[in-house]
Amino acid sequence: MLGEDRSAAELAGMIERRISGVPLEYVLGWVEFCGRRYAVDAGVFVPRRRTEYLVELAVGKQVGTAVEPPTKSQPTVVVDLCCGSGAIGAAVAAQLEAKANRPTELYATDIDPTAVLCAAKNLADVGGTVLCGDLYHAFPANLRGRVDLLVVNAPYVPSDSIRLMPPEARLYEPWVTLDGGADGLAVQRRIAADAGDWLAPGGRLFIETSEQQAPQTRQLLEQAGLMTTVEHSEDLDATVVAGRKPAGSPKETGR
Image 1 (cartoon, rainbow, N blue to C red):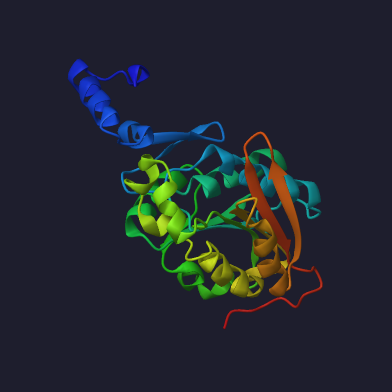
Image 2: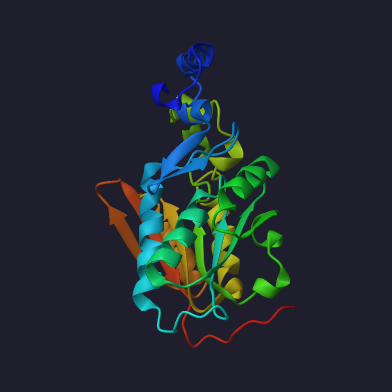
């Protein structure tokens, strides 16, 4: 807060808000994520440090397996589903363009209009489209069968466990961004069920989950026809399940 170069009165107000329990990111109006600052408005889910592992995996796999030459006519189609602030999609797009020298066609979607407005600010520098709607219902029809990279940090906290979360989360972040239903997998089930329809042949889905839930998350993706791996970072205490649509799958067309 001292580094924000605010007036004494503004600084005092910021300190008072933080002491009262308001999350630091809401007080500052931004969060540092993957080495960049992203806007975080009040009422929008705050990106966690552990989610940087999701970005690292998605970018690393995409860069490591890209075989087509970088051309403006063949951008990497990236979707940040349940995007919140849009920081994940923005970070993935920025890193892909820097490391792969390949343009991205970026979409970020969320059911909450407040999050959509916040994501629009964060996507301004990297370009992209922000859409409001319930999961895949927000997608334009021409995305069907074209998504190369689907990155997801959907709610996965079991409903009864939210009361055990830190007060910064359970008191200030909307429950819709935390509540994954009775077993924490309700939203993941819906995402997995239709993922194959939207992924391009060879396209990948990366979804954050907990270490305990990872076997169930993996099973959901396998039931949807995706080839899966479970990745874990001890340093960040982060777990991600990756799913890949077989390259020989027929390409979907808009319908």
